[in-house]
Image (cartoon, rainbow, N blue to C red; front, side, top):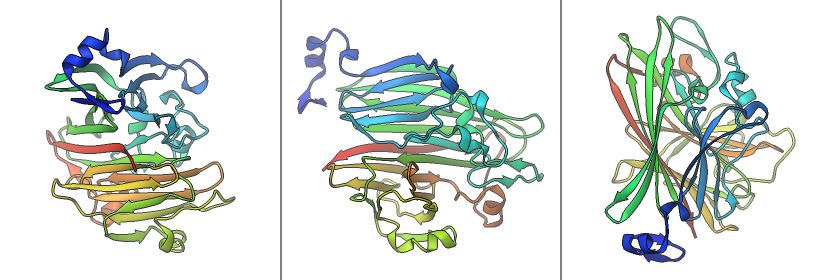
Length: 343
């Protein structure tokens, strides 16, 4: 059964009442045509349950703008979702084309602060994944019993001669009437040498979901500040304020417990709107959650970022013993879900 418009409908009901399921929800492929975004392929998605979002096919299959019943969920930066040709890999150049959006992928061999690789090569902020265009894109949908589900599939390859050769295969799926987005990833080392493996799901939540009334909700767990600036705001990590001039970002490192299904969860709750957005992830492969608390004017955002390392950069994570590697032929599977709840 599909829950739509306050009622449950059977497959037979919907077949009789619509000419095509796209009357209610679906996926529409398009291409952006103006400014730095020109040439970026996108997939506009509607669940029919009030949730709509855009998948950026030429930006690592990131998720850009998202709404629930007309309420924006994601923070968007002034950069827009620029074409990968505008990417600046050096240092913090990544920020020049970081559009925010509901989910930005970071990796595959570097996340976090600019760093150095094992051969002392410079590694820019958050790696290259977000600017790798998807190839082999497939959009499919079908009934699975009484549930109708859409799937977008594509693969991103990070390759450098005499270095890494990694492929990420991503499936983004949602169901008719649903309020959740499911991201299933598999990363395979296609090369013949071990490679560093770092992956972060940079979820960016903004106004009006984020406001002084909001709170971050999670099961009891340990929280550590990244630096002295964050240490000064440690008592307020779960609370928010009005935008402030010259606010310095605060980053907190969380170790959330897993539930009986092996999933960890953090959420942003807004009682004023009666909404919350949760991020659930399989803890076995993504043991860490980074929280980005940024209360600046124009940069008013909460980042909830599950990953397989913290955001200190490859060299620091290697020194801390958190850096993962992926062996030749090895495949790693990861699962993240982003969803909306009404309260």
